[in-house]
Length: 275
Ligand code: FES
Image 1 (cartoon, rainbow, N blue to C red):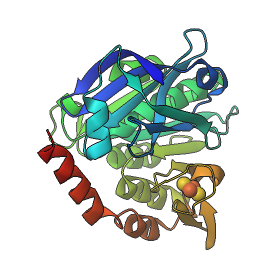
Image 2: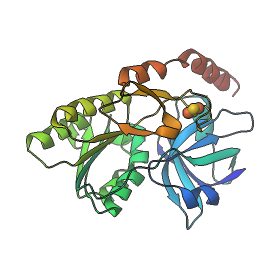
Image 3: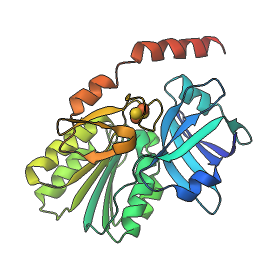
Image 4: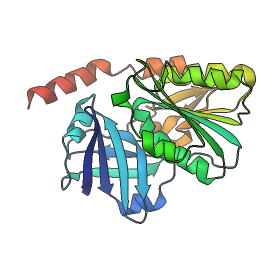
């Protein structure tokens, strides 16, 4: 059992939990994820780490409360315990001094973006960070990401803060201004990552995307997380989660991520009716 030391709502639908797990915190690197099982008979779900502290011996996760398991997490308070945590899993973000790194994130994935952009900055890069959400209230990790940014842009779909429009608009503008860009890193909804990769491809700007396929074991055994990269099958959990955005078959990923929607709806309905 893993004790929750802090529980906080980032938005009405997003829970942030800091959990004591010294063995994971000691080894965790930016870009990796953990498998979380909230209760003994619960489901295992992959969640990216929003932070980790070897000194405090804690890892921090953020979850959008959309399904049964994330709603279970959403009810947890400091002092409660999570049944199981496995990790750190997946390959860490490849870090080096690229030069100008444009990182782009949206919605809940801004939680994952924070440790990655912090690591880019610590590796000596000039960090240009573009964050987006549907509206100002749904922006999260804004201050944290801004604190590790050389240049920082906010976008909202409704114009309530920053640029009125999409994160991709800002990227297009930077390219149109002939900004030197050595790497683009994108994490967020599949459609957003697809759009970003399509924008950078004609300019041959190296582009890394962090994928979110459905996972079961998270260790390369079940095949649930299959993704197609340059026509080859890869496993998101052990070969990723980060891949060359110009080689990802985003349409296949979109279709595969929809395959359990009916079952997810039944599980959520039962969970809500049991309350
Ligand atoms: S989640 Fe099972 S192989 Fe990746």
